[in-house]
Length: 283
Image (cartoon, rainbow, N blue to C red; front, top):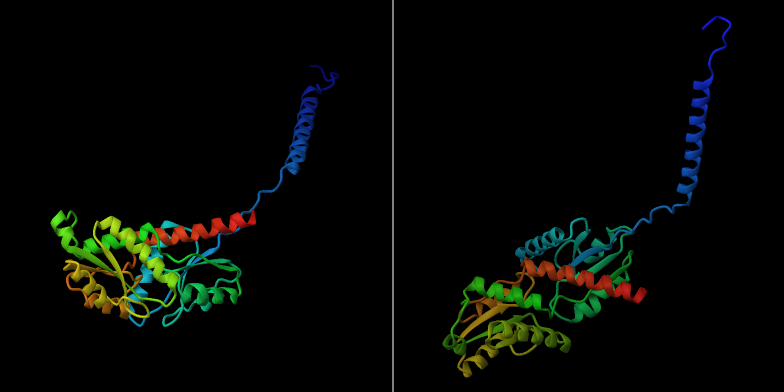
């Protein structure tokens, strides 16, 4: 190349064309991205609030706290809280107030329909600073029969009783008691589920407010030739009534349902059932 030969311009033209092409592609891509709707942020799920009755027995709080941890293990990431109707802290109104603006589903750790389920808990929910709905009580449900059966096995109920053992055996399903007839109906249904599981009669009886009492139920069964009678503790947690019922056992008495894995599954079931019912109403 001589000094009079002009520089070649092809590389510059090539670079300009590439820059123009990239700019055009970037512009078109930006236009398309503007047409894509922003991602929809799903609202956080309502908190699951376990509603315990409360007890002066220190083991009761330990039991329901352990049950709460089992529920958290089943639903990682779900806010799970505990509130009491009376006697223990945190009380339910305080638990709901601490949720801020997070809605809640209240799952009563109660085993049937009664005054607390029908009046006390809905009253607290209605006055709460957050949106709160009340799930059904835990009972009746087959998972309760599963937990009752396991607790009886732990207490010494035979795993494979023969016919002669069954003919002389029975169970008293010992519950707290309520003046509400719906509560008694729910307890009878659970007794029926447990009787089917065990293959022996299961007679409901109550510590207070309803009949028959535990001694009356034991006499009724003895009159029918059922002298090998176990007490199945139909209580969520230890307490005065559970202790009294167990002390009346002529043979074995099971522990309260407590933190049995079936109880944790049932709590989650009631929570999800409540959410599904809300969704159905919204639709």
